[in-house]
Image 1 (cartoon, rainbow, N blue to C red):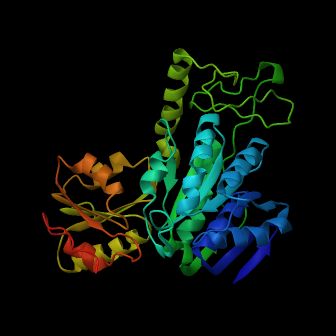
Image 2: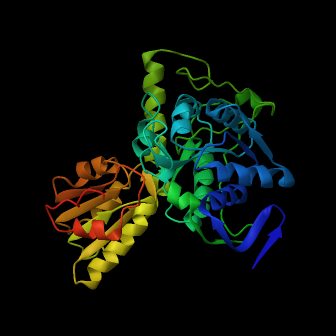
Length: 390
């Protein structure tokens, strides 16, 4: 049963992951969406185009992905909770303005429903090949926050989390879905309005004459005035000081850049999410995310039924990677398996963390097919890689 109460569609629904993502955004207060159609993310735009006009929101189909992310940044500066959604090639086009968002500290959400690549690749088939781009896609040093849902329910829940994190930390936040999760249709339970805590950006606590756009608080996050609200709002992609004026000197860069990185690292407790199962006695730990995380759950349960001490670590926040949580989950492991629909991207981080503690095997795929639980299970024997994709 479902019901509509105000703008929020509550109750139990049978819907696509893409649709659940859109409903999560609406629940989180998103009232502006700018995007350009691209498989397999188009259903998010379609849902927002259908829903936003009726709840006081605004949907704009832009001329391309570059304009989409630019419009989202502008809407956020004016006070809207704003989102866009895309896939591989469009995500590539967004990288320059995404970097602008990190530098100007503009909260927004970018959803990337991944497909097989590179280039046009496999437009309608699964991939998890944008994970390193999510971390390092734009130039320069910055700290990205990226969630990875494994089900339509998590697509709803983690999109809400993404908005709260973006607002609280004044930063763009990514939701890295994949084609199968986006196009999977499952039951999604949407709570009553007000049942989920929604964080908001911190508005100025001082008079307009005393406000500095980039004076950081104790949590390293500056208060954020809205453009047109009577405060001086200066924003630039150049290195800047607390006033927002461009100051392209080494001292200014040395003050600004470390803070941008540290505000994310220091607030990991705000956004870090993961699922750890059977890790108390695990001699083998399987690490996987997104749709591959679901296959990994099956592999772990199969292993346990055979008497093997195999555990699961499924990061729901992939970047920054939940380092301490993985080290704890793998404390008794002698072998680790990293499964992902790419040729080994998050595996690089796991190898960095666990390489000196235990052996690490990769289960990879060039894209186009979901990795099966059986392939993951085969790799749970130390020093043996999974067979190539068939």
